[in-house]
Structure formats: structure tokens, C-alpha cells
Length: 224
Image (cartoon, rainbow, N blue to C red; front, side):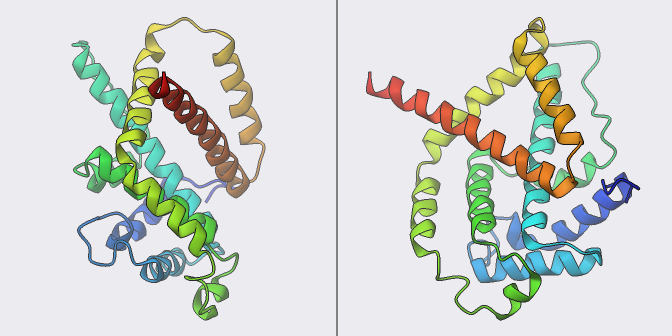
């Protein structure tokens, strides 16, 4: 881990390897994939494997951040192949290949996993002891669970939003810098000044707002 609290490549790879071992968190074929209690046990196992002071919410945020980065980098690589460029895009992120076990998961399943992880985050206890001792943990948020389950069933709508996000990313290198690029740079600079856990949570909040707005626009078009 770096002096400023941010993780170096070795720490990220160690975390990814611990995540890979908890198959129920990422493989929909695993029988415990939708078992919330087992998923929290898996998050706890990651904390124990890392042997540093982490919370369940941090682990979930870190997983979401790593998955988002991996998907974006894979998209850039596919784009360079489709464009027939002489130089295929090769990510410079040293830990990226460690996440290749996610490569064969289809996009709809990835969307469902993202919903489950988001649900885990909202119901996550703030301390490890709460994971071990709170018997009501998995029933106290039944209303939220029902709403999240409905989101899983609307995979087609979410996939459309995902497709729009891919188009936006694919167009990124073909457009000149504008006010949105400047805004993105400002946001990035501010995120770097925050503690890592706060920065990851802030990143997820920003992405959640953008996705909500995209879905709102999509539904408006569907009603026209």
C-alpha cells in the first residue's frame, strides 16, 4: 500500500485474488450466488485474506470500482479491434489481467451481478462484528430487497442503458475536448484529494446519478 493510503499494484492483485476465491460473488452458476448471507461471509473472507483494516462497505465499493475499470478497459480494446487500427489498445493497468476470470460472463449476467452488489452495499453493516452477530441483517431490509429483485428482472432496460454507455465510450476518442472533458478532469482531481474509501463511494454516487438520468430519458422515449 502506498504512503498516501492508496493501493499499489501488489495490493490490488492480492485483493483480486481474494475476490476470485469467493466464487459466489461473481459466478452466477454458483449455488450460493444469490444467498445474501453467504455473500457477506465471502466479503468477510476477503477482509481476513487482506489482513488490513477494512469494512464490508469498502470491500464492496472496491469490487465495484475494479469491475467498472475492467469493463471499460475491455471495451476500449474491443473498439480498437473493430476500428481496424494498426495498434490494438493495450491497457497499461498492471493488475487488469488478474480480472480475466470475469471475461466470459455475458453482459446481462454482469448487469444482474452489479444489481446484487449494489444491494449488498446498501444493506452492508458498518463493522465486521455486525456481519458475524446480527441475525436480522438479511431480513431488516426486505422492502429494498424486493425493489432490487425487480431491477434484476428489468435486465433488458438496463442493457439498453449499458449499450448507450458503450456508445458514449466508443465516441470518446473521436470527439474534440469540450466542457464535459474539463468537468471530468475537475472531478478526477477532486477525487484524488479524498481518502480512498470516500473517493470510491463518491465515484459510485456519480455513476448512479448518471445512470438514473439515462434510464429516465430512455423511459421518456419509450412513452412517446
